[in-house]
Image (cartoon, rainbow, N blue to C red):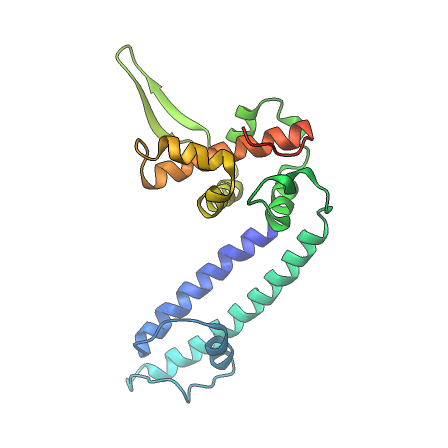
Length: 211
């Protein structure tokens, strides 16, 4: 959870830095080399607007860049720590697209998977359970409940979007539903499918097998 919390902070600082850069420059892109220069207060290579408020904004940019570098270094440390706690032979690592960092985050947040006797309860804990309204005429899907853990929901969504093509189960699901579901709805459905796969592999302690 710590790494996801730090990732949130990193994103917020990066967005604040970009907004500050936009006030004094045409270039709001942030790469490592530029970030290190800005953190040192080195603006010699910057093409800046010479405005009344420019010196004040530059001071803020320096502080934001320095804080962002510190957060990124802390993230590297946390990632190494999390990955180091996941055994090489952990069953979750047999799932295509789930690496040590993702497995470590899932294990760290969930704890004991045996407290979820059914995949539906695990999916709900991950905040990916569908909200369905039923009437005598029809069954209507209203998206996901978002009542569960927001970090797991974000993680599964990211993993599903990034690696569905490498996971036979997700790829099959994608090919089957891509004409009916579009955009975010499709990736949410893929994230839900991945959560069920993770539960099955972990709960039964059996390596992943495509179905």
